[in-house]
Length: 440
Image (tube, rainbow, N blue to C red):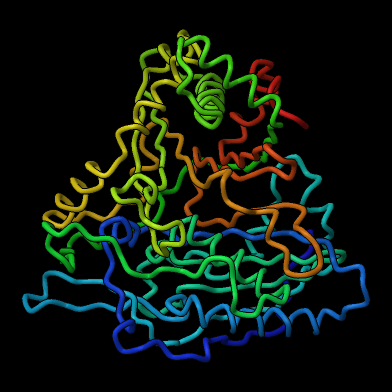
């Protein structure tokens, strides 16, 4: 497949300077846990506008609308700031809203078509090159941008890839920014649907700002592992509804959600096709948005990383011998523990003993790690020439077991991008129980 040719790079910054009181944004444990991990990388694939628009005009328009968007999302144009405490053994991180700017890269994938991205069974690796700041961990935000944008021309399409530091934003905030940028690009100027709220949630009893021992800030990256590939599985609304009904009937409840049933279905298939022994433990790590789970709830436009995780552990034999409903119920019960009390406990304990998440934990054992959400507004991200035809993610945080979930192109459908070993993915295609729910 073709190679990437870089055409230009510009720095885009907001015009309006933040007030002195909003120049510094302190970070909480939800966010500081991510300093050793990699940024969020999501991008949208569009067909080229049918009207007679020159690509140079499109690039100029996207830069101008990004500048206006950064007036509202000004922390993204800043950098991570640090304070080294007097003993030199601990360090505090914060967002320095210094307006240093956002790189805007214009590139071309000569000869690559939309079909070259969508038609292969596995996601082609050239997609990784559609994103900036590859292999740049979050803590490099002290000198590297917190947000970078790359617009890549294809022969018959345009790919807009965004890399956003995970310390300053989660998926909800990432898509809040992306959706707002497209809204402004369509002509909404600065009157967007939801203005971001940057005030952070803290627990009064905990000590802030958090002092992280420098000994805990050792970055090792993801350990080398066996090769992986990525495949996108599409699930239609009707199939998901049938899975939900089956899971609830088997467990004798009505509390299992569509997503919980789908995750259980996927987990069972991955475990079956990894060929695990019955006594081997398998783990499903789940991240949950905490905004509505805090008392009182945080606003949806709360801009930051407000997610918390839970881990469901089962022996492979139990997972496969018992029902779909049993597995979905285990997921349901772990999610139900993620609430105001658990968030408060996390903040208080983490402030006393801060330990950023190490990438190593995702590659130990038989892990399935959930990323993303079907609630994010992917296909409403219209910059003025039509809705996207697909979403793809970059190479950050990829390992054998990462599952990225997002809304499908049809109403109520869900897409799952599974990053797994080639052998597991090939075996899943022959798994009739799993593929019966997949729409090709």
